[in-house]
Length: 74
Image (tube, rainbow, N blue to C red; front, top):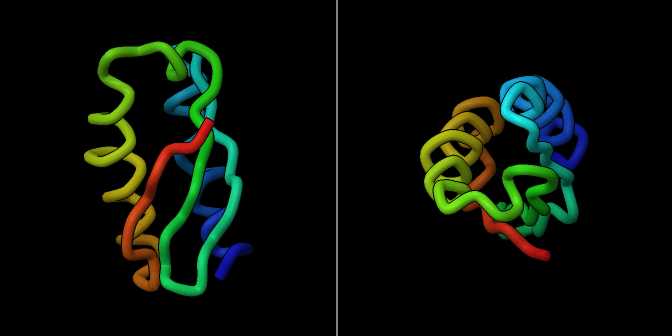
């Protein structure tokens, strides 16, 4: 499942990079929880949690149905 998640992140990464941010896959748990680290402009952005939940999480759940949640870690 980690490989599927990584491939999905590679598809969404250019959208984040266009705004000066980036995303790094940290871990994919057996429970479907994906841990990511937001980098660059995303790291300090007040809208980063909205981007994470409404953008990244929504996209990953659609691309990889086994994903149950996406959380940001430092």
